[in-house]
Length: 356
Image (cartoon, rainbow, N blue to C red; front, side):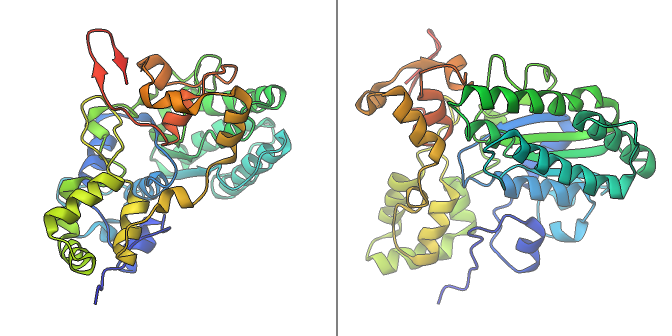
């Protein structure tokens, strides 16, 4: 009987570790991220482990050494300093209007003000956010850690409602801009989302963010590699092979055909979708698990709006600027479809800088 407990749908690192779920150790990369830079952005498709990554960073910056026992970072980190954490999750609303976004931001600000104090002179959302970061730093003596999950959810929900999207962008731009203004009081910041909005975007003032979405150093920070299957799931692989009536080699080949198709840089190995892979081992059956969770509504609306010929996608060629940024006014759906996880990099011509 398979005794492994798979963290399907588990996005909280502390819960995962305390309850004995399988954890693919990414903490060496997390330590590298935390000690070699300060402000980051990462885009990955849905159900790819972004929320778990943020939760792991939160536990690390809270100094919860006991949760990392036996992991790579236990030997790397010597101090385990506790920092004030400001963790914002924008994945819990539909954002039909600006009031939805204002409610979410205000609720988080109120919670943080209870911890670190408030100033009645700070009335706007950005001013309150900046004041909280400053007071958190002075109250604790440690610079703040900012973690923002699904930063782009309000914009994606209104991808082709130009008026509402402009209103939401005008709210988010100064709010996120606080990360640059308050740099002196920030130890670490990571924003994650499915997409990266470009041109007149929420990031136009945030030129201090390092985008690691197409960075070879961090390709493996979310998702699972073939090597990690052999390290962490070797026994489960044998069980799956026995149940399917296949050899280990045949099973690995089939897993690769089904789930490792994600290439986030021109040179990267295939990264397995963790949601699909873990469901396969939990149920000991191959299936379209990621696809069966549903297609995002924003993508359906985008395809309706652009009338794009889906048959052309298999031979699409484009460059980094297109793949790595979304312009809400554009009728080209390729960047959204790629960043959402429905297309991946098949080939790259370095001479011309063209991706297929």
